Length: 386
Image 1 (cartoon, rainbow, N blue to C red):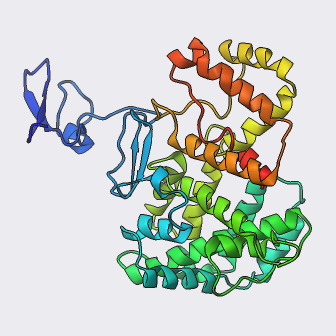
Image 2 (image 1 turned 90 degrees about the vertical axis):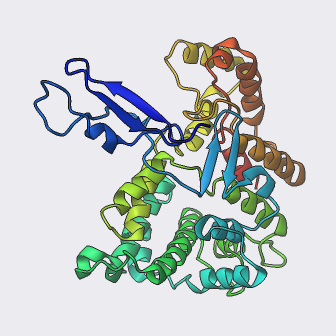
């Protein structure tokens, strides 16, 4: 690629030619702002309008790269599919956060730090959770739990204590990262126990992130009273697949909130609220609900016709970025095959999902538009089979 590339923009009225630097197929909006347009009522220069941010790069990152043309996802340069099942979730988190997989000693310290950060559940959080109906949407429980946790830790809120405690304080940031991961782990277990009428169990100080999550959820073998190794293995793989996905809508919400120098849990809360949108992470639930609504194989043609007529959305299909198949979907299908084989699970909706997938993968309406299966379509089957 030629070095020092520029884009020439000529203002027709004045004839003035402006050269704008091009770097990695992008230009800086600030360079456009330096271009004045004759007759403009503003001295702010050119502005870019793109309400969907489809053509806006809000930043550069060395963390995750999404190769949309070839359907590949890379974490710190490592192909995500090659990491699934070969690295623990802690190792993947460490790599994403601190640029590289940890040594054995670093991995052990990180694991123990996460376990040690699993504080006793604050009374306020317990009381708030008990007020929420057990059949409420889990995301509302997470939102309420995060808010209650934050209320119980007001000293972590910069505005409340009148001090910016995070900017340029990397030791505080590192501690907060671990505390936020542990908080999410704890709240996931609390929500599961609340929905199933169970009492939260104590974590193991030497247990891994996934092991302790399952242990606190009481998702254990009835004989050993410990998490089944295969469940640990499957959940490790799922969390690795969903560990990061470049500048997603939820990530953007997190970073936007962080730009105001808010605390980590407030940023996390913003991301969670965004993530559950029906065309974002909420599509996982929407896809399964859609299959329940279809109900039988005979009803599939009506669904496909409604989708083609733009009367319905086919949740779990299509992706704004991927032009090829979503690599996460392929990885999840491998896990699903493994889970179904070992658990002998037989979800009555699975044949319906397979048939929709078969039809959509061959139908020119979907193929010509690049509408392919994404990671949301089969995730509920994996979780329910476990």
